[in-house]
Length: 114
Image (cartoon, rainbow, N blue to C red):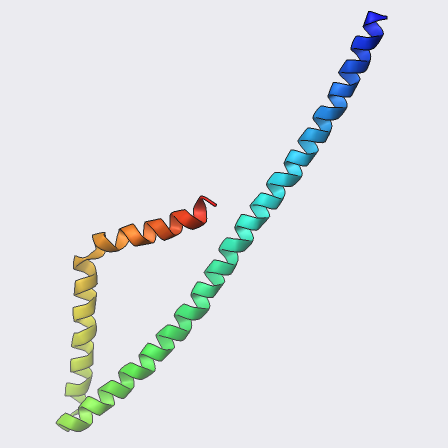
């Protein structure tokens, strides 16, 4: 009798363990899918918005170059002024690059540790 009860308990335990493993597997698959889809859509949005911003900045830069060129009567001066502005921005970003790391890391950690 005692062996029959032990056998039934072990069979029930085995069934419950299989059920737990299957449900855990499904849960982790859904969790991974959620994280991957969130990151994929985030990257896609970043690419689309970034591309649009770059094109807008390019056309605005040409417009400013042509406007400055008309004031100084020289295309060379207009393009040099705008290029100098971008070089100045690049140098400032390089100088303050360490201060830019903290907000970027906070934003990335918010998405990574969901």
